[in-house]
Image 1 (cartoon, one colour):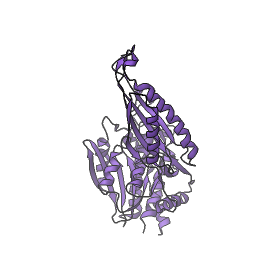
Image 2 (cartoon, one colour):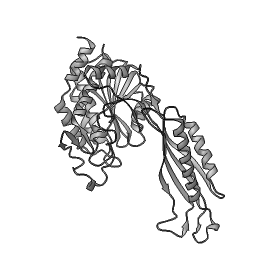
Image 3 (cartoon, rainbow, N blue to C red):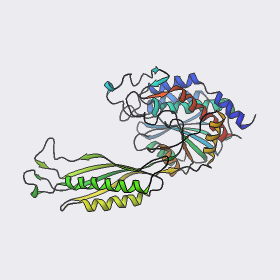
Length: 397
């Protein structure tokens, strides 16, 4: 039997009923952080995978924050299927029309927190790996499941995975994030920025006795709007769209309800999103220049980039891209390209580990983090079959 026939056999071996059941089981495990975290998901999946013939490793990233690594086969040149076990909080329960941790099926969809982002994709990867085992047995190249923690935070899980050498020796990775089963070869870059302003406290009736940081910070925010317009004129990506500089935090007060006190300090948070043709170091310099121009006498400020995630672009000729494209063709599914508007764990697999990365997974791109989160069952099953076929094409012979 040839590799294409084996790829189709693996896709057909995907157990759709088990996939639905596993997705529901994972949704029922509360794994938001701060809160229970990922450990309960690892506690569920580690014996599940070990009982099905996978070699498992639990990597402690921080107290209570765990990665789960599960391997099939052995040898270099294999494939990583990657997903994260953490989810965002459910928020206000009153906003949900279905309980967020029930995993209820309604109208061909599974509802619940994490159903889309990304316990559905995670379950699809796990069930696809089982199908690969049915088709290939123990392949000569390693198929590695990376189930990471803290993707919704600072991505400490995938960073620890890479630092420990678990990404070495592989030819590519598929990141199973919700992208409507599109082949996403581009991911936006991200800079998370704190800007601290210092002035001098004073009575609100005598502002001349102090130095108010609020006007300087406000002037800087307005200047950033002009910089954003310039960046958007310089860069517009066909799959990623426009770059953005978004203020998300603006904190300044001297105390609780102290309306008559000028604050001595202000903190501004920025969420910056970039395209592959934009250099973060140069952008930082431009922001720092605008910051200094915005300061009034008596005000000083610092700008800190505390998280820097480069934009990524995977070449079309990469083997993992060809495997995914061929797998879609074998299954008679449409080949649609896309870009990831946010960063994923694949950002660091590409930037730090040097792996060609395809982001492809079930679920609507705009569905994550909302109340009544859901995933279409038909799309979920299709994703598992794509993973299974692409894995065989990467691992065989």
